[in-house]
Image (cartoon, rainbow, N blue to C red; front, side):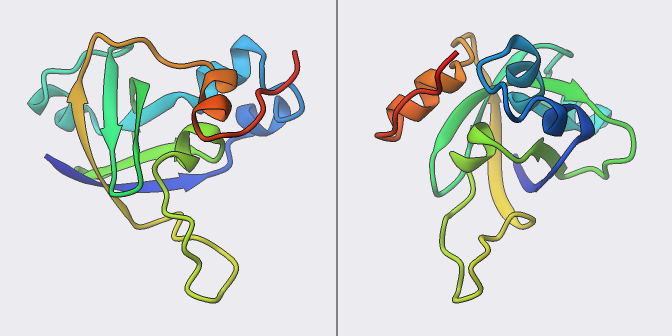
Length: 129
């Protein structure tokens, strides 16, 4: 099933942005917010791990129901998990398409990577604790 990924800031994510190795930041940044009916269709329960794939890449996240999302739309706060999915192409504007990335979602038993692991997977240096 295909979904449109929307990204943006959340208050919780923003309040921990200077502590990216903290459990609270990871919990917020690794959450994939979905419509409850979409979760039922995919047989995904709250807190289940899901693999989210786009043309850019894939990452394992935690599914969370969200009121206010329409069917076919998912939300991830800006950060390292969203960055694995959003194409960095800016079309000359200096800003990637943070609101229109098409993704697929499937249940998985794989673990959710830490922020450090994500940074190292993309060739960067893991954040310091």
